[in-house]
Image (cartoon, rainbow, N blue to C red; front, top):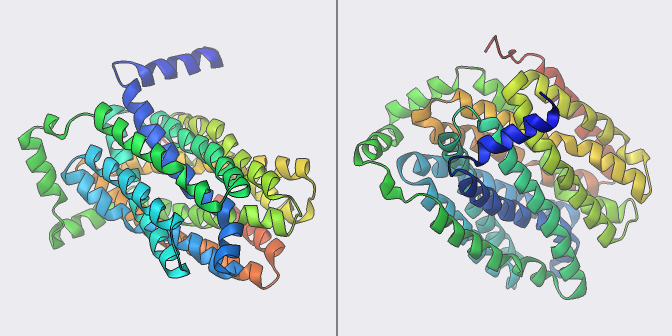
Length: 410
């Protein structure tokens, strides 16, 4: 079977039996939410100027956003286990829309930080519910379905940041965020219309979900015991290191391109969106690779190139050479589709939302320290050296992947 036949068959499986509209709606809302988050790094120079923020404090603002995005994932997972993924995703989308209005009208840095934290908390309600509902819609094809959804997220991160940057440059930074609000409200409406009603779940299954999702001490011990199996703590540690690298890189990359490499804000925004544009292609391929060859080999494939790209970044100048390195580094975006698919497969169905919430909240909360630490390094004159350090950490991640089991060993 040729590559084109394989892609056609995969697309048919994902779209068939009425599943296509569900996947498109879930993925589109996710794309808008991730695009919202990635507008922040593009607007960071404007926010630093308007609120007189240093690189360290600017990095802290991004850290607050990532931290909010992490902290709500555990309660979001618990709620998704007990109630409706549909309602959780709609609530998260609406909260982000309201929080953006607060950010755009913030009169002081304190309000800016508080509203940014609310943006992150709203976003944190969506990802676990997204994974658990996809695992129910696509049993046996979670890697491909999640890869497509994450690729749509990268499409949002490709399209929305340059639009936000252009609006900020032409009018005001507030409009660079404000234009997303109607898109989020439209996405919430689509989720309400397209996804199944919560009442479609039988009362017996709802009761079972409530019982399994009740967060008693005994259930907590059981969840921890389940998560210790199947290499989950080890994979969670790899996920933490990946998040630390990814958030450090993306949080200040546009600022680095402007202040160190001398690019205009427009060109920096184009390179930043290009980073995620490559992810649109990489993530579905990475998810499909996980389904076929397992976690170890697929992770090695997507993480090897970024080590060289990050290490070479301080020594390269000019738009096109930097564009090539940015594309090389962006293959690491496939890591998320691989690790999250593995976690979804490994965690028992009855605690899937809660288990994913525990792993992702822990990993993402610790990884959220990346931007502020990276900003502190940059403030001390070591912006270039910071990227070499990221390359070294990513090399450690590659070494750790060698300890992961092959598919027939898992």
